Amino acid sequence: MPITTTPKIWMNGNLVDWADAKVHVLTHTLHYGT
Image 1: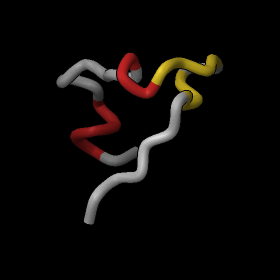
Image 2: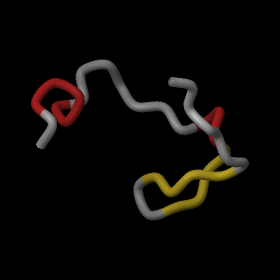
Image 3: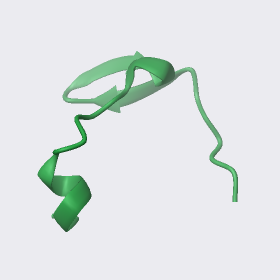
């Protein structure tokens, strides 16, 4: 199922460009889903 992108996304209290919304590979929420 493809992901529908938007021009901006809410990240860490700010609106950022979709392409700039990246998280570090070691982010715990990605590993544990908390």
